[in-house]
Length: 353
Image 1 (cartoon, rainbow, N blue to C red):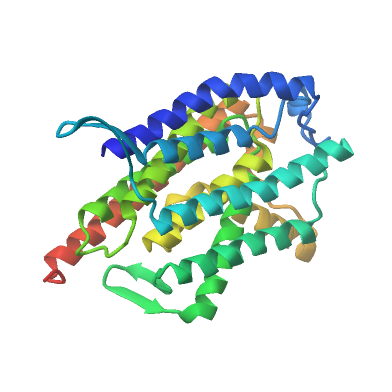
Image 2: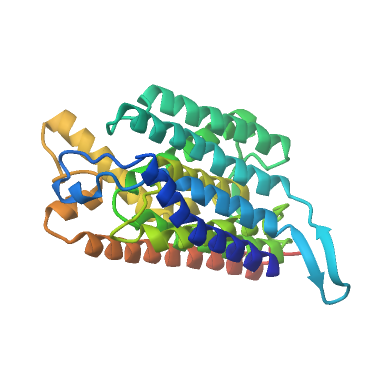
């Protein structure tokens, strides 16, 4: 429990104090956001410093490392001791930074071209697939069970090949879904705090119930998730409407990669659809819009992703953000409830020895 608090606290402190420094540096270099012409109500955001996700990277890494250093214990007093890293925790960090690096290249390309067009879809997807492929290789090498888990009592082995395909689908899909949601000030940061907070609970519960959940390194995954919560909370202080800095693809893709990695490494594959229900909802809105327009020549929404539809209907930006946070919270509550219900059914059903 202490390691979780250390990770979240260290990450939060670094992020909340380093973000204003990043704002000044980015402004001095004229690294600002480019706005689509269709979003008339967002013209005031043009030039807002972007690539703020880099600060979140630093916060998460600092929090994760700080939780692995012990300076005091009640038994031994003042001391200096390092706590070993777990392979699963390091894999989650890799997914976070790896997907974030692809987002950083995309953001930098927009800055270099001075327009809202970054990497081509081909290069962006290729980079995401490369990160996901390395993650799959590392997971298999670390002994992660290549299975798809439905419930504690029902899962089926995919084998290395199909497990790799699952990893590719989940990492790239989640990274892009979070990226699509990142269109309003604080929307992703606020919702991510709720979702990663749920994974802190899930990973810690798995750590405390190893008979039911044989997940090696579950506590380390909880530490990583806690560091992400601290980072997004600290960043949200400056990213809340009206945002003084934007995380960009650098941050949104990193968060998507981290979220998918936690689902894969904790064996909560299907639960990701519920916990990240807001991101699924937004991604589906884009898919439906594209399908309807190409097949029927008509748009379902005034604009996709979904949050822009409500803006064009006249909702103030802050209203959309808060209501979407509420939706994210409801999805998280249902997801955590199902996780606990599955645990109760497993233990009461006589699965435990």
